Image 1 (spheres, rainbow, N blue to C red):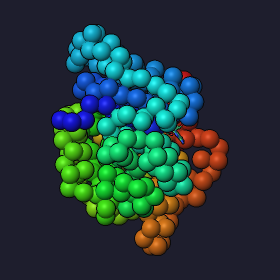
Image 2: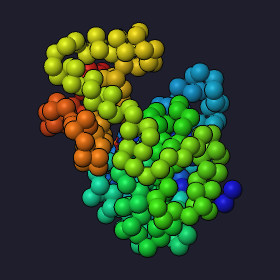
Image 3: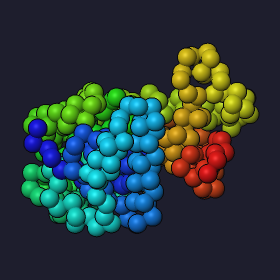
Image 4: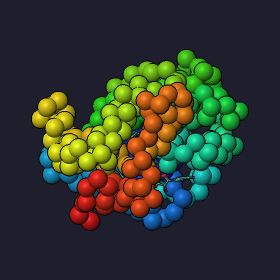
Length: 284
Ligand code: NAD
């Protein structure tokens, strides 16, 4: 495989997980975020995740150190100049991602692939703001990244077969299963998942059952490993809200209308596990 170095933009829930799995596979990772605090938190999360794997005897203690040694951090996007591929995992916001891809296009070496972990935003639109649209693609990892096998691969209209082939190869190299989906709002995974979570939010908003009740009904009744509201807290309520809005606007169909509770919870800063409170309250 020709990919040896990976830039990861965003050290949050997804970015640090992506950095971990790439580094664990022996790739050199440069993880970038806007501040040192975000980077420190990202590295601490990776270390904690590796500690759990050591405890479960899935990896040796030396593997933990080797993985951490493969991750460099930076606040400067310019430090991604030499990487073979960038996987962008910054906040789910279209304007922010378009701006980032313009900057990445200017900074990264010619031929470097620019992938986005976006949950819902059009790859064709993201590719369109770069001068290397043929090298832009979606790599949609699932949360938590070290545990979940799927990478949903989304081709922009402009993406070449070669870019797609390299991304399939990379996904398999880091132990994931790539599956292709077309570029459409929410692609496949979130086209199905997020409307269900949005409906669970409505059920909660209308007071039909408690959060625990809703989640237990879906766990015991549908054999879901996790209830939809607990899953929303894991994903991040700001992300869930952003994705349901993309579906609503993208299809212009009222069946995707966002539950009003998203705006309230996001305004309150209750973003789920990452802020310690969402539908549930979490220990620090
Ligand atoms: P998050 O809020 O946990 O982390 C986002 C990170 O991006 C933060 O650390 C933030 O500081 C950083 N960031 C913001 N602006 C930036 C910029 N201009 N440059 C560099 N970094 C910047 O969010 P997340 O859950 O990790 O989501 C990241 C992406 O992954 C989103 O596109 C989201 O839709 C997607 N995604 C999320 C999940 C999930 O379950 N959370 C699953 C699949 C995909």
